[in-house]
Length: 410
Image 1 (cartoon, one colour):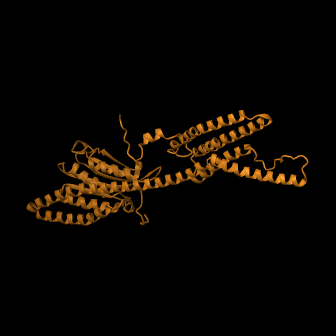
Image 2: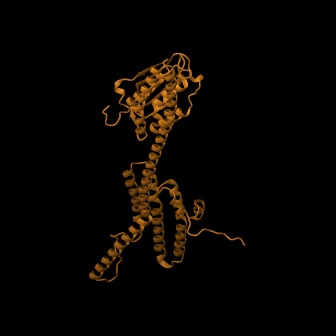
């Protein structure tokens, strides 16, 4: 005989728990007052409502005499009250939640919907009319009649309180409390998700910065040191100039690289200075290189992501200039553009090197990293583009929203 072993005190798998659970338990797995929740909630009411209907029919069938019509009428009224209380208020609340109103207005709308469902059912409840005339007693004294009226009013008040409590329960009072708690928990979960997403994005950006820094630093340092060694053998003065440029570059960039890994944005001016120091080293090693950097003074204080510009410059040197024979040129420019949704900053690095027909197709790791960082920081509002120049070479351009550095007043 096969034995089924189940772990004790362990939750059932979600698929199995859903199959075993009733419609009410399944409904709790969906947002309260949602369309799917309402469908399962209605199904959870059908069996109890069917049993109630069967009991009322049996009671009404066995009531004899002249009181049968009155009792059947009361049973029918109770049945209608239960049906209206179960479905009307909840259905109206579902319609309210589908309107996507602001939070406070939505809460008020749901409460009003449930109250309306209960108030529509309340007049149908039997024995709740306070001003209804009391039954008469033949040959009763005025004192007896007054006592009868007082007892009748007390009973009617008790009946009203009883039916208000019943309608509050049947009409969705517990669902309202669960909905309010669910909204609070969902909001807290949403905030926690945003915090986790921002943390992941920041970690991703810091990782990309580390990758970019590791790409930029070793390549040009090794090439520069090789150039210094060669220059010392043939042209010591040029070797000394290269060392001076290298010292200036390291002073400008190494503290910046360390700090930038903890920063999302830096000033454009600091990145241009780093690019100029870097190109000064390259020009000392390759005297055939002509360098031009063009940026309006007012744009030097705008905010850009760190290491992007120097990565484009390094890419132009590595894939365009170093492989070209004869004179070469690199031009770095920053231009303000106006778009329909605000001001934009365009950073361009143009070279007259080998272009796309040389060693690069524009799909390297460094460029992919830049695209990923732009997407993380700006979404679809920023982009990196590459285009071939008419006279040869490539222009790499970054277009991003124009933003001032914090506390700079720019």
